[in-house]
Image (cartoon, rainbow, N blue to C red; front, side):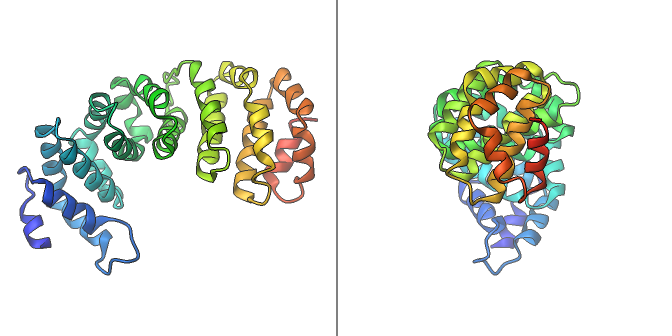
Length: 286
């Protein structure tokens, strides 16, 4: 089977069945005895990435092929050199075009957005910005913020793009603050959502003082303080919340006062002996 799939590469289009086979053989799972990383290396070296791109491009309206193709690409990313190969063959443009074309298709958006997280490095930010990824991710949040997987992948993309945008040209609409807050409150008991939302708060607020003010005036501080009670025993989540509060309070008198009024200062002080992050956060409030 592997030999047949390897022969299917070299820039020739491969069918849906082969796409799913590649995805299966390269997925990260302890239940599969085959060396998935070795498989991903072989498929990357033999031209299969170009073949997958061609298959998706030629079957752009076929959601089954698109899903199979991006699942295969996502799993091939287990080998870092494959990410560079995907960029070379235009995967940044392809994933953005796919999300834009299938914006109402939840299964396609879920796997394409997950694939997009693989391309949000510093080297690819300029290409993604040229593909209008800012408006694309905003549309994703507006339409699919109630879908947990899409929400977390989208937040991950936003925080990575903003953090890796050395030119500071990733100007998201201020509306994104209220969208993130409402989504955060919807999944307040979910660890992954809380972590990704905190990453977005830190990235955007560190990127611009205006985002910091917008998050503060839109209720993010109150939302962060409220979920602290639910995640008090989770050190990782508490560190993320503390980072977000510290970022929001840094050089922002209004947010500093909001944290004190909502009881955030007391919560941070009560846990400051457990984490250095909490100590740093409370120092911001002195």
